[in-house]
Figure (cartoon, rainbow, N blue to C red):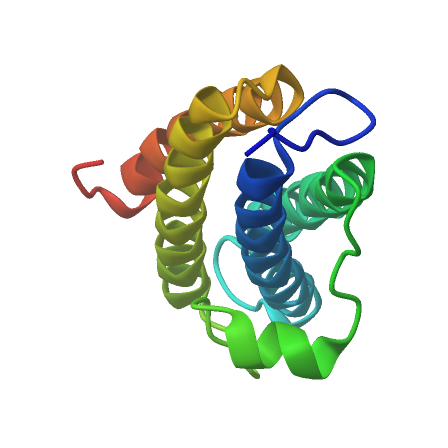
Length: 161
């Protein structure tokens, strides 16, 4: 049986699995994005100014990643999921509503980052097997940056990262 490849020379059996995992990651990022946006809007209290800015950084970064993930799915020859009902159904990260306490919000951010990192590590392994350097580089960059965020937000909460 001949190996079928897509337009960028990758095995279509492997890229189909990659695209499905990327769509799962996309769904999680969309919910993470909305949560960070809500934290930004609704945060109150002692660390308002600091956290208001940090949450804005998070959602701006997530928005860039959302676009990059969707475009990677398209590059592999598949369609990115693009309905919020599907995001909610698929996402392991849960919606968070009306969170005003900074420490609670940061704890949710840490939980979300942990979920994203696990999914990105899985994609890193899959992309390596598929010889997909584009997805591999993307995941590697995301993981490195998010590991630092986990350390920083953990330090804020005085938790071990």
